[in-house]
Image (cartoon, rainbow, N blue to C red; front, side, top):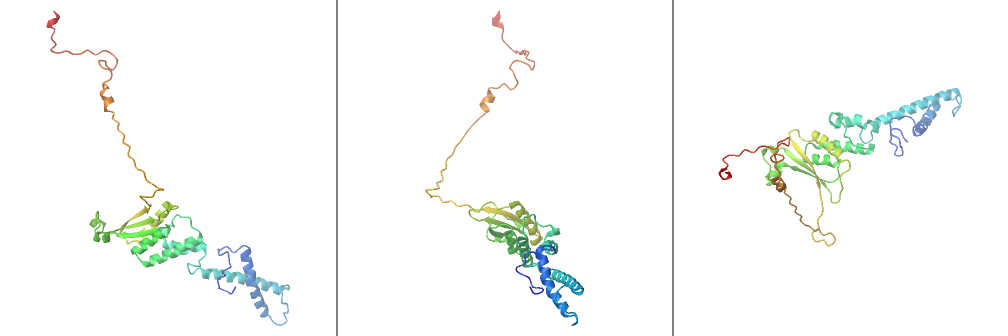
Length: 271
């Protein structure tokens, strides 16, 4: 490949300068450099291949120059997010995009992480507008994203809102019909909130809600809905009425019979 041209067939774009692919690229780059160095020699140096001592020395120089060129090409590609090597995606770009350098706890491969960074840059430059809030949620969860601002809802006659809600907004993630529970929802939710705290205006408050849709066919003969009501009643008061709450009647705590006090009892008929 020509110098400083990205090779579409190259597989390894890491910083590791080892391996079969890297060695092959070094040899391919060193050969034209070696030929150029030989052509610079005087006419009494007639060897065209590696063999004599001076050709061995020039070959070593050509290999080192080839390594230097390949390293410079890799560094040159790190100037833009679309070609930055995976090892530097976070340290060069991600660190400046995420608050306090904290990356969301999600399982991304290199390409997915690169796409997220590119979209975050786009969202940041859009500014703190409702579309940016929806785009943040769309980065992590598939579904229809609706952003509703409270002051606009109030103008449309919404109830339950007052002046304390004027700087609030809702981000509703509508899960499509038949869609299942989002994979890794809790980490995605934390990532959305983390980035929303950066993108949203500092004086605003928000609610992030997930809405699951379902379909109801009332007259479908194959999926009839049968409703019924069951009513159970129980009362424990009756049992309470039969219980003497003070233990055994006419007996104290030790089981001894308790004397009963009698007042104003008529005994005239006993004599």
